[in-house]
Image (cartoon, rainbow, N blue to C red; front, side, top):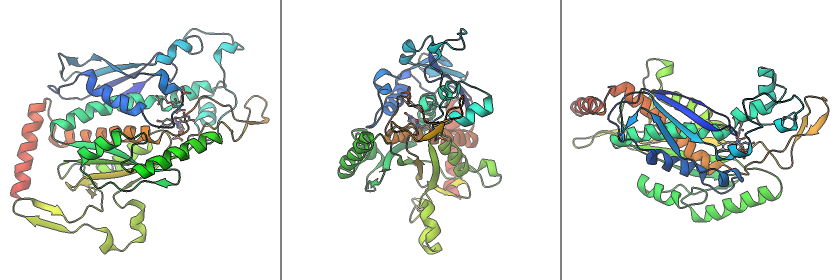
Length: 387
Ligand SMILES: Cc1cc2nc3c(=O)[nH]c(=O)nc-3n(C[C@H](O)[C@H](O)[C@H](O)COP(=O)(O)O)c2cc1C
Ligand SMILES: C=C(O[C@@H]1CC(C(=O)O)=C[C@@H](OP(=O)(O)O)[C@H]1O)C(=O)O
């Protein structure tokens, strides 16, 4: 499968085209809308999330609640567009027209200056509009389709917040269904109530001082068969593909699997997962410190992957910057902004990781219809059982 997205944050809509979704997958807008709504939640977001009510309109590839194998086309409206029709319209306006809401003071930490230099744009709004994380709405919609596919084969996903600023949540000891239930009810997507209160207080404190916060989120995927991805070629290693997908999320700066960076300070005996075998269960691991991957392939244990999000770049007490017109130092332009978007980022990460897993799943069990894929999976399961 592959997808492309288009659309600006204050333009009329976001658009995505997904190619390669098999036929006979049940798909209704609701299964996408659930993910879009999850992405909009979370303490610390700015006023924009009160304006938007993200819902997907399926405009291709689905008929009577089922995919047909044709490309899926979907759009999500920007409700905010009504306030931006002139500023973001396709019709030319005067160079000096105030209605352009031209940006000429780049924000440190955002795409403004690099994008302006690269695309030779003197209105940095032409960079901001597409570099905004609004685009992740379309990516989550695509991920939601991938989750639907995974769900057909009993593969479940969850995400939870591990850290916001210097507040760390306790690692939850619960099933994936319980984790989903508890984090859904949490304002910052944690299972740890004590940490939740401290995280909310930290976000309030950052906001009060015109500052912002980042954090760490974890995604767990269960029910994945052994052998997705491959050791034979660099670009077929599924952990590598997931890493790329995670770091491509706006403001994500790092990724780790299982023990992750901690593995660098431990001995081999404390890091690797002993191999076990039981007649009933087949091969399994005594632990899952690898986070579900060896040799770029899934081990059959849950995928456990974390991503770190830097603090939001737009500060109400801005950092020094330089005006691109006068070349004079200036404090950076202030745009309406979030204080902390880590809980939302967890949902984005869950959906982009689900996408990569679904792609690897289809590469392994490929087929044009759900029935063909199911037959291939059953056949492979038998092979693994008899190994
Ligand atoms: C859910 C989410 C919401 C975000 N909201 C903002 C925001 O309100 N203001 C801002 O400056 N950056 C925000 N960001 C981060 C910027 O989009 C990101 O820093 C920017 O695109 C530059 O890319 P980079 O940080 O990956 O280098 C958000 C990111 C995510 C994932
Ligand atoms: C719109 C979303 O996030 C936006 C991401 C974002 C940024 O710079 O990345 C800046 C803000 O945009 P605005 O200035 O319009 O409020 C966020 O609200 C969204 O997540 O749907």
